[in-house]
Length: 70
Image (cartoon, rainbow, N blue to C red):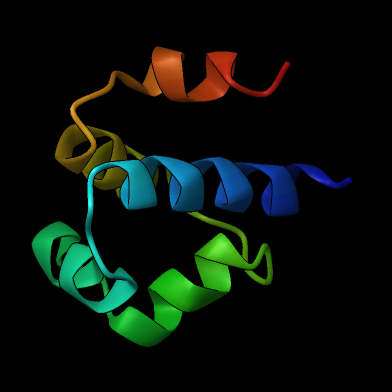
């Protein structure tokens, strides 16, 4: 699995564990809901700025987010 798809999968799993719909989570992160869908489906390169926003809203550090790549 490529890295974009894997990161998207991790973000989706963490988002669901927090009980957010994709639309509500995108709004909380101030990322357009369509773009969030592309991120979670591994269809776009995500910027570090957006990774930081997402990690913050998931209450994890960026390092913790990337540790889940294993």
